[in-house]
Each structure stands twice: as structure tokens, then as C-alpha cells.
Length: 145
Image (tube, rainbow, N blue to C red; front, side, top):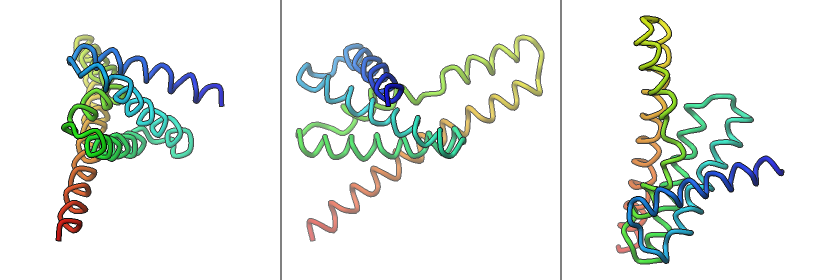
């Protein structure tokens, strides 16, 4: 339980840092931190049980997208205000770095392996966000009818 709180806290702080960098309105900065923290906790917990970084990233991105859409509706702001900073902890920056590092060391097999994994993680992020946005729009259409 202590590890989960620590993971939440660090992802919350990193999301807040990017929220400040992206000039998110001051009243929403803690809320974006919450979205990023919850997304990372979902990633962490599903990673513990599923032992698959790609599927964990998908569920975390789906969670960030759903919370982003819910917060956008509740606080009457665009969903991107919550989703873009909230997704930052999930971005596979280290994977991209190690892909380039192994390429520079001429280890093409390791570069292809790491690059493919990084690509699938990025695809999982975009798929999770697309599904959450589509789901939100579908619910809105049904509600308006």
C-alpha cells in the first residue's frame, strides 16, 4: 500500500510539473495531477497482475481518457486540458531512448525489439484515448436524443 501511495505521489507531481509547463489554468493543475496519478496507479496495478506493459498502458490510457472526459464535462473545460498532462507519465520516453542507444551501438536486434515494444506502447496509449473519447461522444449522442 505504501508503494502505491508513493507511485501516485510521484506521478501526481510529474503531471503537475507538465501542467505548469503547458500553462494549464491554476485552478485545474491539481485536478490534472489527479488524472495523471490515477492513470499511473492503474498502469502500476495492472502491470503487477498482468505482467504486460502494453496492456497495462492501454488500461491506464483508457482511464486517463475517461477521467479527462468526465472532468472536462464537470469543470466545463476542454478534455485536452486534463488528458495531455495526464498521459505524460505513460509516454515511453525511456523506450525511445534505449532504442536510439542500441542503434548507436549497432545492436540492431535489440534496437528492433525495443523499438517495436515502444511502438506498441505508443499505439496502446492512442487506442485507449480514442476508445475513451469515442465512448464519451457516443454517450453524449444517446443522452441528447
